[in-house]
Length: 115
Length: 114
Image (cartoon, rainbow over all chains, first blue to last red; front, side, top):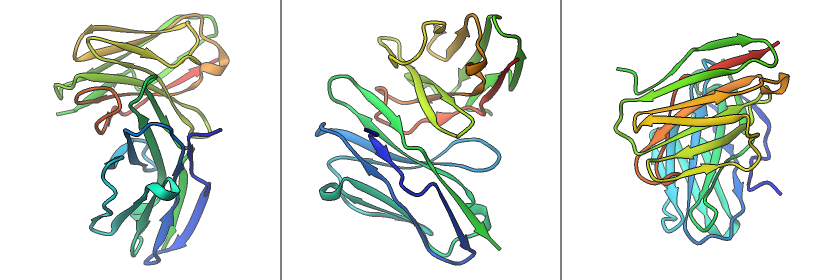
């Protein structure tokens, strides 16, 4: 079973729409970290956010916000008022710190923001 | 100043050859990583390494080996290249223990095996 599931393979929205990218993870560890990375068409990977398993506080950074819910093992990412420059592949990732340290990326969600 | 650099950016080679990809980070980070991204954009960690511990993804063939001459460098050697090795390889680095902090990625090396 996949440890990180991003059920939406591709999403298309029109500029200024809000969009939420889903991430569901699976772990038995009590200490773990969750990340989101962005990969624009140019190919580089850019870090967006990191959360540890003990901090369920949601976070907002400009037009970006993240909703971490341990009860549902989800770490969803919302872009408000999307822009064309948000077009990219977005990856959710899980790092487990227990025995057998493990780091895994989800399959990614390709977001296309149309003008 | 480039934080994480990789050379070469493109590598085209024949099956059976041996090749290396170099990675350097100037961030003073403790841990470095190698990832493989296939044509479907799946990113898979191959190795994580700091000066104390090498963690190998068990699915990585032993034709792949990381070599670290010092804390700022982690090179990737690939022996007997196969068609399925064609992919983009990313190097990354982070502070502290592997997996705890955000990773900074290099620009990637696109490897094509003919």
